[in-house]
Length: 413
Ligand code: PMP
Image (cartoon, rainbow, N blue to C red; front, side, top):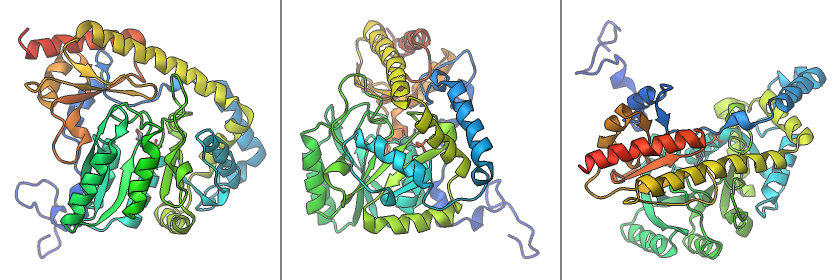
């Protein structure tokens, strides 16, 4: 700002307010691949990049009916502010959803949020001072890494394999950080159909992870938007079911119903819940009454379990198409083969760099997310995430064929 109050450019930065931002705003950087994704949304590009649920598989009429009934029967309430914790009817239904993964809880301990993304933000706001350590799988959800960065956390990754987070790696990481005198606030984990890795934490490892965190007084933030979208066996019981006092559980209707409602929730240990509600109220006053009531009406009147089954069928067919196409066209690569969710994690040979390769892929009309997006420490160049949730099986096959042209071109085959 100049002395006469007229904002001025600072150095080469075109934003006249650049010098006025809070330090934490430096954590809010646009993804380096954002511009390419804008190109990748052209219809001729097969995008294996985004994680958009296939909402066209939803029963539109049932949702329309639910909206109609909410407005006819409870219009003024739906259009009004509500309580900061969310409407009790929906919270009671959320208990039924969570019971499918072995969770027993009280409606009083659930806080409805604007998607689980907001719950991630609130929990981070409550617990993180600049420089605090958050443990997260290697790789981890790009949207969580973004939130953690915006609160100036240090994200330290912990290795995982086909059975999820590795307990010994967790122990070793905690010991190393403790030795360095660093403060670990929580472990952020996606136990089921991991975004982006596609793997699931085994039943055997779950109590061990709980035990390690308990011994070291580390809170667990369990993020589970995909658990009900299994292709075969249901997933093992939630971490939260094993330790109600040590785990904050995050759930969402974005993948089992529709992300457009922006309805998710946090189930917090009793002691944390009150702070979470206060933080939510200060951020948004109350979650959308209208959205919550429509979701609640849908759950009460539609066969939501059968709808989740339909989603499973759609995603299973797409996953099979992706794995078959990878086996056929890119046998020299390796990948995870998920039993649910939306994502396959592909590992490339060391001489390939997925970020450098992306412009070439977009020229060949296929897009993916480079592995670097899922690490806070610059790793991931030799990996990529492929999503099978949105394109049709046919488009997936076309996309993987195009990807093979790109990879083979880079390898000079
Ligand atoms: N966590 C994970 C692991 C996710 O993949 C997503 C969505 N991509 C979210 C949280 C946020 O979901 P929402 O806010 O729509 O509930």
